[in-house]
Image: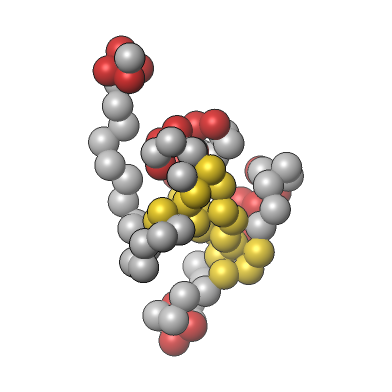
Length: 87
């Protein structure tokens, strides 16, 4: 599954192997703020946590995310499964 991942642009340098592009959705285009510099990439994973973990993305850097087939972005993450629950 592919996910749209959005982070603050100031954190892009933490992920030099990932191709990022500047990003704003329709709502954020109407706002002006210091935290208004966001970058987006499409990354694969079995679920959002596996996607973040396999690409070594710090969840604290995450601004928003969604499966690419969804319309709305999410700003919170589901509970992270315990490793023993993943078997």
